[in-house]
Image (cartoon, rainbow, N blue to C red; front, side, top):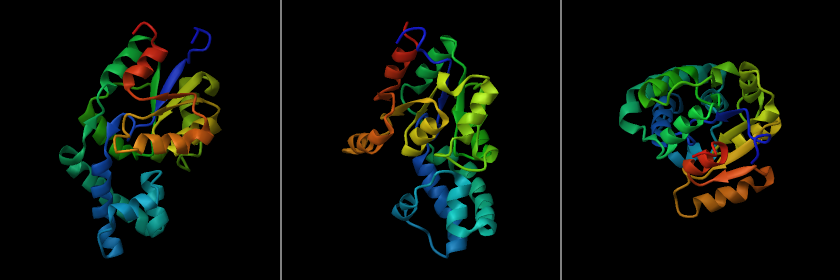
Length: 226
């Protein structure tokens, strides 16, 4: 990349990109849904519904009124279980964020996480300061709708075409494309047998500009002195 093609800002998805909260979300959702479903849903049952954001996931399953009540339960379980079930920051991510900040990039987060859950994670994970954080509470529709990314671009006063959005899902990459941003797919969370290869096949139609297997690869691409 030349100086002319380097981005002016970099935005990240959060869960599954910077931090591993999979077990935390599964158990928090199960406990939050049980009183309303009358049984504990299985992990497979929840995954099949493809959660895009906390509220949309619960609303789609239970309807708005019961979904809001379930979300209140979710927030309680998320905070209580965070210390035990959050797997922490992915290896290499703290160094990546530090290097990008040192290179002068404004960094931001656009996440399907609600603001309350973000505040818990921010307090516990120590990811550092971000120039902008857009949560599920700040948008009317979750990714792949681009409105969260466009809100972040406005807050940064940077044109979408000069921003890279980094994520680990088809919804992330679809939202980035719809927002007119360049996109980067991350493979470092895809550790199961054949998981990375299956993901690459799914995202091929979305044509990400970069695919990174380790945070250090992203760092070397955008902070070229590293």
